Image 1 (cartoon, rainbow, N blue to C red):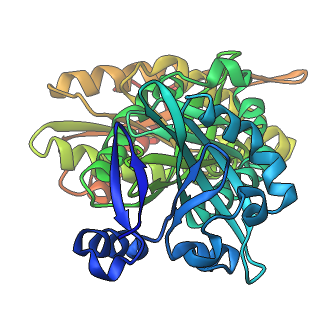
Image 2: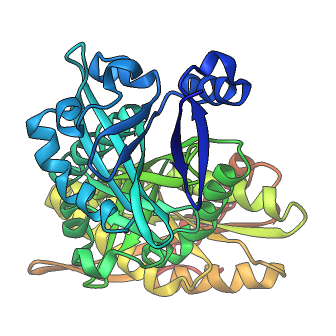
Length: 438
């Protein structure tokens, strides 16, 4: 029986011309024909000795049609010219690995990875083995990934808001120009550093809790507002929206994609509105709402601790308004507030309830005498001469006070008010010029 010899690395496999009578050859053919990769052997004259069925899909030729053909006839002149350096390298005894784009028999573009492995027997190259794997899916996936990355990079670079990509430990991988402008740093200064260092110290604990929610799987998105430190040591309020991007099946690390928007102006406006809500606009003192709030807060935190309330009313203030007008009266009230602020030490605080009525709150009034002593001081500093343009006039402060537990804020104020009116009545009855004693 006539046989041909198919060389394998370091040995030769005898293959009969009639494979149906050779079980070993049958199994070999069955194996390579079922593999999706192109498998072949070309002799040192570049002529095919064997090819599997996968060649049909690529080149439209069966293994029988390919056998004996020169590799140029199979590949075509253009691809042959591109592959010739690799063919020559294999015939020179060097393994070759390269990628090539092919157009198959149906006209579809296929991306392949080819291996040319020289067959060396007794230090002489007999030919080379060919293994061509279709990597179209991988290449297209990589191109889609690269395009997605390109679009992401373009989007980040041109985004109107600050954007950053961070590791789950807070290290920055990417920052965009908008974030650099917000914080006043260059991209080089912000990349590769722990971004938590730029969070205001008072806001770091809540930030750590939010990141922990990412790591333990209880959250995939967060939104919060916090302060950040700029390069000029100023503070900026930013709203931060962040999402966790899983690394995926390729073993990449999870990352955090965060967006930052400057909300400093809004936060300052909110703070100012909040201040105005508890501030008397004429005098700058806290108002009645603030007084009630502070008393209730004290009652909640220290329910058994006694507090003091001092109630003040200005005798003769109506005559100031009647004689000089309300603008002059406002000037006097502002002066009263200034004197009151100077006379009331922290943590005590002064409030204007309205008109010419003022209150001092004494939260740490361990003894009744403490409140009485401060009431006497307040009466002294507010009673006396006031100068209005070229005029000088005398005002007397009527002062009352109370001391006890802050069970009811309104009741404490009422009791101090009643005490003030008792002293006012006593003052009128005694008609002592220049004020009264407490």
